[in-house]
Image (cartoon, rainbow, N blue to C red; front, side, top):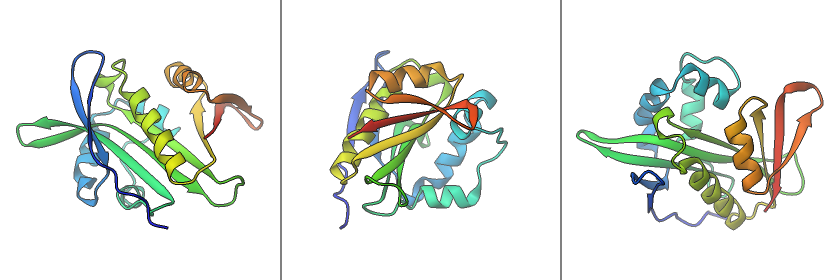
Length: 176
């Protein structure tokens, strides 16, 4: 079943800045690459759970081509003189080998946009979208030292579970 289209929304953040939240597009690939380049090494590690110096082209290609009804990705954009910057992104990917119908999420917020409420807006919107697309559970892996993400997960009613084979990772889960 094809997913319903997503109508862009304008969000005002705690610090007064505004972003447009919209579905990712194939044409966003270059902007995603620029956004990755602006992330600090610590932010890259928190998001990808490894030290990455560059974005994997195959992962980028998959990211800008979500499978309708199975995957979804939002980007938060802000206008610039030459177009727009992506300052945040959130996605879920359907996990086909798990029941009940489960998706795994990831959220990225640009370093200079942290603390604005953007991450909370992205994840809350992703939860609503996954529910609408028929998922029953959302989960994600979070670096145990990433207290802001763990606090956000608790706030949005995820349960936290230590990974049995890796003390550096916490699995967060939530029924939708």
